[in-house]
Length: 153
Length: 140
Image (tube, rainbow over all chains, first blue to last red; front, top):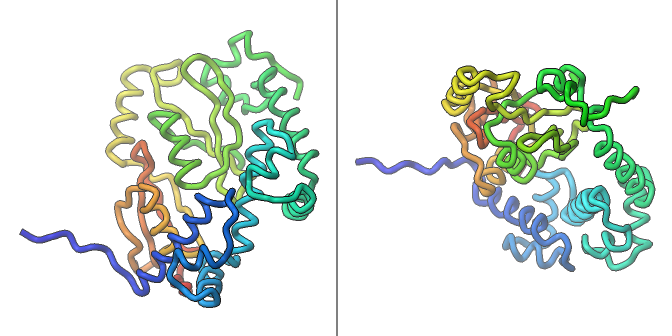
């Protein structure tokens, strides 16, 4: 009886530690974490950790943490949360820091982003067919249902 | 290409797979009746490409026998849905494995480059390859 050999590749243990640190950031982005916490999780020196992380993910851990916070902020704004609530929910200490970073990374103010998505959500609820290619709506039989209002869009 | 399909067996399970495990972005999730919804996702770096998580169920589009046949074929892993590329195949393999994604083949050097294969929650499979398949795929 033979045992299943575990798949292995060069530097597998380095990869696993870097990936675990990335997953740690993904799970703890809303908390106050710093590089010392993250590099401790990976059992690396801070400098070595930053270098390896950037080689794999194209960003330093700090850049990645900021990016993840902004991505989560976008989701919460789409869900209808206020800008000030979202700021603290995703781990920022200051509304001005959050707002400035959001605008730099997303290209528009958080308030404008929230307003656009609120408008689209209301439109989707009222006229869902505006968001669905006609062929799909027809195949599903949705375009024959008078509850799904047609639109000129 | 703007919109394309992935035939799925259960939309709730597919949502969890594509959004929570693969990290795709939710584009639209619009209820269209008691048992179905218009559910589309997009890869993180391709916001203009919508993947419809298209449920296979008995309906106007799928008569009973067709739906049953298609579901059986999906579960057998007959359908390959395409190639997903990543910047580091080993890091992506480790992360997806940690999140519970089932790999049919781990990253393996083939004559055409390094490739891994994984299945979604329904049974559809994807090829995973590094962006530059003939370059250095090990970034550490």
